Length: 186
Image: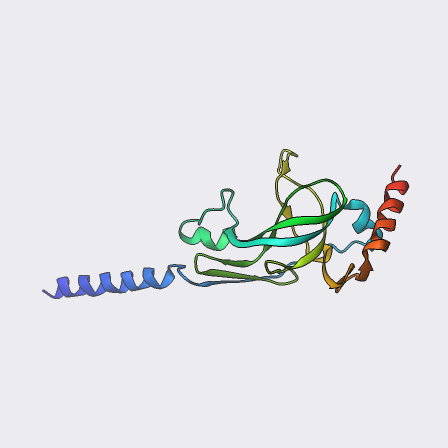
């Protein structure tokens, strides 16, 4: 009888331990992101796509290859991203009809991951994006962009955008800077 009681107590303790370790509805922590911050001329010349765009959707996704929820403790390794869809209003460099971008951090399936120095938008926000093509290990272009915090400007006034790194920029000046950059690369 004592052995059965000890076995039951041990089973309950083990069960409670595993339940307490389940990553359900937990904060996955905070990620510190250190971006490379090029000078403004390099930002313009190295960007494959520069566009003024409006945020049309926002959703949290898992950082797995298929975007699906990982199992067990892999949940802590996969990360969480916020995926945005943008409707380009004015493409200044490059060519596109829709922009899909991902920023590290967000919420999905009751889990939260915070990321420092990353961009966050709401549906309807208008932004100026400087984006570089995202490629897989084989060099093939992936259909979404990483949204790098220093390369995102928010609209301050009509046709004037700002961010903490580069300050204010007008679209008129940016258009001239793009032409100058393309002339220098010829």
